[in-house]
Length: 234
Image (cartoon, rainbow, N blue to C red; front, side, top):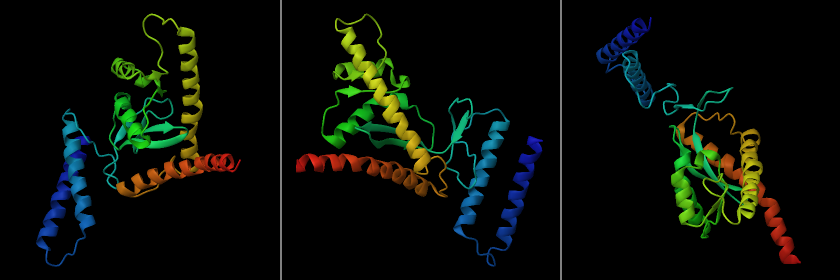
C-alpha cells in the first residue's frame, strides 16, 4: 500500500509538471503554488527514504506548516507534540525567552546560555539557580561550582559541613521553581493563548509566542510598579 501510494504521488506530480510545462504561457501560477508543490516533492522524497528504512532529518509532517517538527515528550497523554519548543529563564517572576526552535533540542545543556543571557540583560552576576532535574548534569554542576552559583540540584557525593543550611536553600529554590516558574507556564498557556496557537506562518507563530509571554510579564509587573511607587511616596 505504501509503495503504491508513493508511486501514485510521483506519477501525479509528473503529470502536473507536464501540464504546467505545456501550458506555461497561459497559466499564471502564484508563488504560493510553487512553494506548496516544492514542499510536496520534498515530502515524497522523505517518505521514499523512510520506506526504504533510511533515517530522515527535518521530517515534514504538515504541508501548510512545513516548519513544524514532531517533538517526542514521553507524556502519558501526549507522547508527541507539534509546535515550537521554548527554553525560558525567570528572574523575580518575569520570564525571558532564552531559545526558541521548531526542531527538538536538549534544553539540559543550555545552562551556560541561560546564565549568560540573564547577566547580559540585568548586568548582575547570577548567585542562585533553580532548575528541573534534566539540567543537573555533571557539566552543569561543574560550571555552576566554578562560578560559585548555588543550585537546587540534588547533592552528589559527601555532605558538606554546612549541609543543613545548604539543604534549606535547595528546598527554598525548588519551591520557588515549582510554584512560581511552573505556575507561570500554565498561566501563559491558559490565559494568553499559548496552549493552542492559531497562527498560519512561522513568523506569526513566533510573534504570537513572544507577545503571549511578554503580555503576561506586563501584567506581573503591575503590582511591582505599584509597590515601588508606594515605597517612594512613603
